[in-house]
Length: 290
Image (tube, rainbow, N blue to C red; front, side):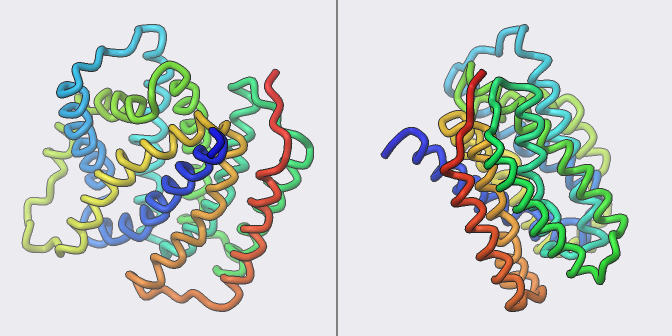
């Protein structure tokens, strides 16, 4: 397989892992506060990452990269998780998954500003078309009303898109798994004490499903998923691989329907078919390096 094809496969694996993030976050915030879920997932991922980098004797990144790591930490370790956690208190996971479908557009836009990638006009048509499809779906799903949860989700999109680009830029200097490892380790001095302070005093009031949700977003969404996602973007290009994330909407819908019992109707799959077509078309567009 070509380097680009491997990048697409790794990107899709990351999307499948991330696709379960909103449903499991919703499980977690049913009994746990959004801030505890955010700090708890960051702390668990940070401790796991610390064990990995120490066991492999990895050196601390060069000082010139610290600013980029701070951006990744603020955006992907703290910002996006806490915004989606608050959103999951007010909107269904399936609704959130659809709204986050415009994340590839935000990622490509920030990529054009931060990196040397210049997507072609056809790429932008694909991205905008895909974004319009999921926004129309979101409005249809909420009877043409945008809620506070939608506001959290739109902010999460901006924060995450910005963080993805800086994360991908760091993969030019080290493997993707090292990027997310150092990002969550950088957050440990804040996340670990905060998680202990916010830990619920009444453990009996927290259902096992909430602890499972926290464990998933900490180990898979916050850490393992980025192994595949960062490497995929590094191999296939940020703008091109970010198109794969349009599929995350429908991964989230399927998981939400199966595990949370949320409604997924025929129209959902019609939208899914349309979005898949946009993603496939986006794969053949030109991404120029300047």
